[in-house]
Image (tube, helix red, strand yellow):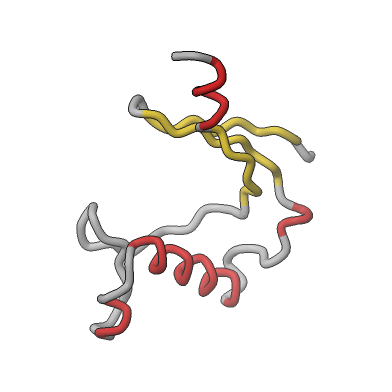
Length: 88
């Protein structure tokens, strides 16, 4: 694997925190209730809504300026998360 290909798989993100999903199975991000509009959404849309709800409930910060920045690398071997700017 070349360095340029490896570099393309790295994304710099802000780490907002950790929350738990109520997923029923591994292929779907779950939500309580049987809302048909939610069931038709893609996993990406469900994840974004789940994060937004956690932010509105105060479980995750809304503004990322005080959050740590991380580098995330995704490959066929797994996920690697590295802290870029460590704040004490």
